Length: 388
Image 1 (cartoon, one colour):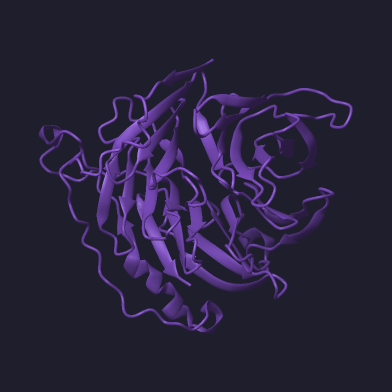
Image 2: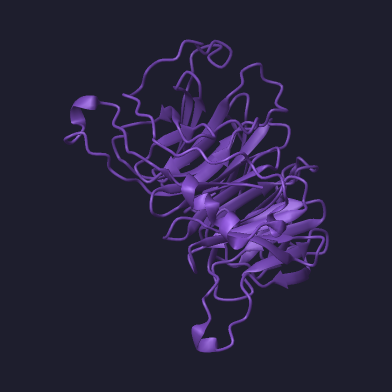
């Protein structure tokens, strides 16, 4: 059963504009790179492409209670998810200590949310409310947490507006519909839930079952990825450990079809027009494109060139995959190596760029809305931002 904290009347419209200091803020000292090279990634030398390493953002753990700081030491926190704001001006990072740190593109900490949380369980998913939303209040985001909660925050005031508790669950995935009218959650308990944004009331619950049109309706294991179709606002896709991608119709509250094969362990599910992209946590054939209407495999994209000796092959093991906003590129990364790679869709999935994500693999990645930057989050407390 979902428990909800009721906001005060009109809370969403009456968010204070005054910025309340939630923590002692420290500016991250990040070197500012040279003026952005306008040449496309595949025209740059390997040395130029790897300049990304100069922009690695070291995340400092900042306590909401400065008296609890330990000798002013900065403790590190793994980055579980990264997300650009709709205007591409900020990057939000969900961290292993339960906080959400929001940076500007120069690497300075702008806002800190949920600092000093009592349980210190990770923030595993972040979504900004789409700019197309009809709500008057902007700069809103939802965060999914491993303690089973979903929290709505107003970024600039650092105020939590709403909280939902999914009892017995750990939330691993979130997504908004393109119009911002509803959002979905999923996680450990295998149930996909859809909420109305305005009231935060539960609209639909998708669970394991059997139907005449889909013998494997619903998930039998943890769900790690959700994606609303950008043009079909009532179509929702979900994927996880059970090797299926379920395609749901919110209106009928049923799974209309499914894809069998992808083993999803992170935010590695995306769709552009009639193509579904999946990134699986497996040794090979991890990055794949599927036909949205038929569910058939279009192609597998080699994440790395084949090794001359199979004994030297590095497993792919992807955690994250996404289309660029215009659909021209796909990017992916995982724990098989420390790098993220980008491919040109029109050029037969030619590798056009690769860059270091930070050492312990790439947990999450996201293109900015304007398509000019790609951010990655890694297991060793780093965010990398690449100019495209």
